[in-house]
Amino acid sequence: MLPGIIAIAHILGVFSSVSALMATRTSQGAIAWIVALNSFPLITVPAYWIFGRNKFKGYVTARHALDDQHDEQIEIVRRLVEPFRFKPENKQGTMAGEKLAQLPILGSNAVDLLIDGEQTFDSIIEGIDQAREYILVQFYIIHDDGLGQRLKGALLDKVRQDVRVFLLYDEIGSHSLPKSYLEEMRSAGIAVHSFQSTRGSSNRFQLNFRNHRKIVVVDGKAGWIGGHNVGDEYLGKNPKFGRWRDTHVKITGPAVLEMQVSFLEDFHWATDTVPDVAWKPVPAPEGDAAVLILPSGPADDLETASLMYQQAIHGAQQRIWIASPYFVPDESVLSALHLAALRGVEVRILIPDVADKKLVYYSAYAFVGELLREGIEIYRYLPGFLHEKVFLIDDRVAGIGTANFDNRSFRLNFEITALIVEQGLTTEVEKMFQEDFAQSEKMTVQDVESKPWWFKMLARASYLTAPIQ
Image (tube, rainbow, N blue to C red; front, side):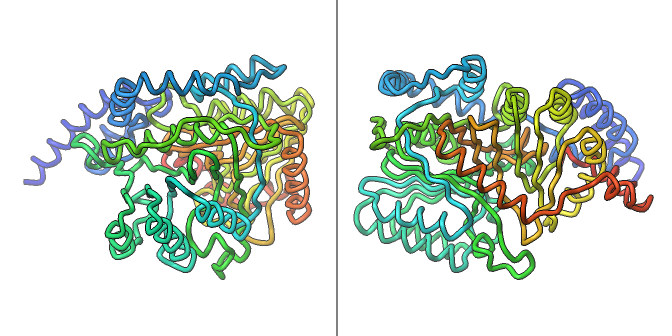
């Protein structure tokens, strides 16, 4: 019996090796999978078919169907937003961003920086209370706790006022969400659905793709994007982490329509339906911010999130400051950081001192030494857990969204980022960074070199798992 199982495993290992050879992104990754699949097939064959895929082909097919179904509507939207298209001086950088997003950068927006959970959810709940037609809500994690009940109550109140509500959540991120929470909303008329990354026979064992987006849209006029999920820990109420440092942004104006595009693609994948929403761009009163909404994910032809960060690093002339809770860049992004430092750009990176994922914590010590030796400054945030995903390029552009600085966000998660050009906002983001740096400890080369040999070995081993962290 056992010899037969082993023989079948080796046969499956050979077939899986062919798939790895043709589909794995890098030659190093392909070699690693092929060696493992043929050496330890009993373990690695199941692992490969759960964690080895880097393209979400089912979603690609659904996206094409949606495009075919709504080509006429999409063309109408493009014509409507054309008067608001922003034409900056740096056309090359803008062109790259627009091609990655497959959306234009739009002007006439107002933006509000929201620091930490109280500001963020007070703003979101106030926006929900003002809804008149519909509300689109999407979060990676929703907990049935104080904040989760507050969100649910606000949505139920609007349904009773005949406002249409559509809610998406990720079934892996929200695995602890009880059915009673969902059924109460469904019975009230809220269209509640999980993202269903395992939908379809070919995706049944697919656990590696997650929908990490956090989006709220009200009436196509106001939208929210950022790092917060729905849970009391995002209000700093988890005693393990203490203060939860996170950032969101509220956008009012034509760019909100681009947030709708992302939501509707995800909703269409999950339900095969498309909510009826407004597509008329409404400029914000006295709004002068230019905004590009850049969705990214494993259904893209290119590695959109990784290229977004590389473009930001290459485009920086004086500085690039980056805040990320999970800082595990690949070789291409590390090279971009080195080049930025070599040409005299001030590179500062803000990461947590307290980690919620040990592998990420150890992985950083595998490569931060070479960054520090190049003059790149790395700060560990001390007061609590840093969860924001923010970057600042010179004093020109701020990026605020859901994408971390790691392989999962670069290639495996569905993410979304707001790229914002507006002097007032970039000044606020600079001030926010400065306050965070002041509460952080600056790392030194000695911090890395003084670690014992077993720690360094663990760091290297952890970094090798970066593709599935």
